[in-house]
Image (tube, rainbow, N blue to C red):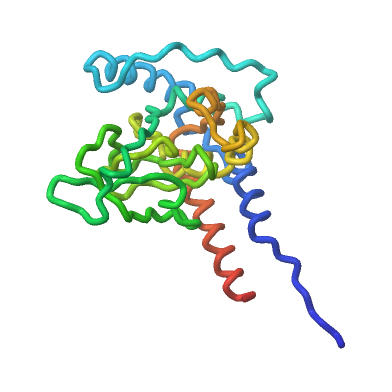
Length: 243
């Protein structure tokens, strides 16, 4: 019997798209873009101001990136930078089970306990609330599961939530392209999983703060994110047609 087969690995194609994007090979560079080196100077000045007004805490300096750490070449207008220089990293904290609520009350906020609260397509699933939050993340914070199940990623689409220790929040305090940062994490997730230690896998704050990210100019971040979204939508369409 004659059969027709189509070798289509959507996940491999997604990974290839992300890899090309992080190397600066998915969209062309625009010589009119303000280079990432100028963007970093602006971030440095803004960080000093945020520390001055006590919106963020002063952190210890992160080590310079060595040539040996750079995994590939990037365009001249890009810069390698530690992830900790681009975000305010928030570590979660557990709240005793007896204080969890199974429905919201007037003063409660959603409680994100771990990877089970993040669906495979990045939706946030809320089933518990607390009225005594201590680690609060705000709308548009990137969430990453860092203990047990490593690498579930979502963008908070709620006004605020408390996160448990299984979650870290990456607060976008410098108004970089949020979707580009999310795609970077999706591309970096296997590296994070390789850093997980102990019988119950987990990654540390340093694993996140010291990660190096290829940073494009701000305008190019938007173009890259839009192109990835376009290509991923096309992949989903092809997948549905082949089912």
